[in-house]
Length: 206
Image 1 (cartoon, rainbow, N blue to C red):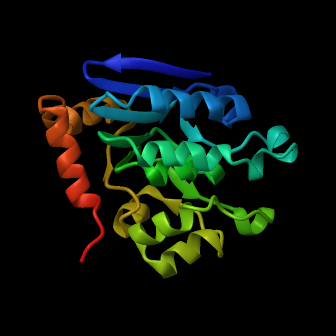
Image 2: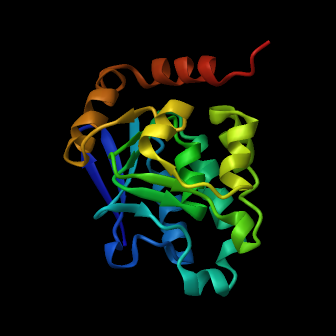
């Protein structure tokens, strides 16, 4: 249910369970984590979904069985955040719940116009993944992070772009072309050069 493909120097990981809104099981999270680890030499890593939903988060049956509090979510987002190249979340549709962890961990987020963002941890009685609130706050600020995590607001693509949560909105059929354009300079550069620039950007400000 996790497909790995290469588009030139881009490594693309696709969540392919559209009949279940790409909801994630423990096995799928492990497969995603392992695929991210295996892609460390890829200059550009893209995460996307099949169909019209990026991911609805945890599979409901798996969540009831304990997946909602599994450390696998944090392991996955940590692997993405630690990738030395450019990471792009290509949101073909809505990203919800635990799936937000991998989205927030990416360097860039592009989205189809129909995408929505929501993270209903307050409503469901769970805590967010440990790293997610800080990553969300860094992107949108504390008040808007509380709008999503505490007030349970569903944010459309246009508003998410205004907030800085999404970097670009493109037609769904243009997502693949846009990821190639964004990664073109990186794919043509030396890996050490890419890593050095990313470290300079991500380094704590003095």
